[in-house]
Image (cartoon, rainbow, N blue to C red; front, side, top):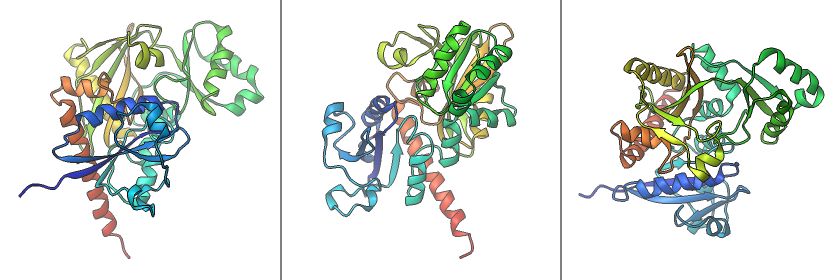
Length: 357
């Protein structure tokens, strides 16, 4: 008897500044998912937050945006039969705010449907770089020196903020929005007179920003996969074309080089993998994540920079490429992520069933 296909609802696009990256990631997943095992329903979210059922993420962006009609943000509750989405599992591939930050995960939890990737808490903690680093530090995961500021701090006491930076940091240092990915809004400050401009730029994207000490060394990345017993891939190395691996080079120019696997002594490889799993567990992650590291040149110290709970999934993205180098090709990786989503949902349902009524 032929096994029934699983219906996977791929959710992509979204309201964040990383909308275009989501389209590329979703297209790669769509092309690599096993169509013999799965039917794919494509759910596009416009930059205005409208939900649209489309034929696939391979459509040109203009066609996706002009697709109609839009429907309720609760697609499984729409009264229009041709727009109703009945999926076995949902696969959000939304980078940044309104997708990677726990919001879409909360929506899926409310609907009580299985979904791929981290849950609400891990997604929210992983999106907020300030909270994330506090959890890392509490778990004994090494992080670089950093400070957080709000837009109110900056609006009311700009001179005090700049003075504090001079007292506590050496040049160069980095200024980042707290809740954004893909290097959007990040500045490397190499002269004190650049500080104000860097802070203002970061505050364009978030009400809370992070200032981090600059590390002279190598950028290492490691992919993690799993729920209760996560495992780490071989690490890779990023060799930026510019000062750091910025948005333009990640997605537009592609001049950065990648070394997969990273040329590291076996002891350092094991340490990166251990810390990747430790960081993953520190935020309570499930499904998948990519962990980014700094390897300081002078001391050999490894620092965890951040966790990405919905990492880039393009054909050239590090998350799938690291797993490919570790023996898990793209199609099998997608299959495993779907399996993990079902597994977590079953376990959660069993726990809820034991609660007193």
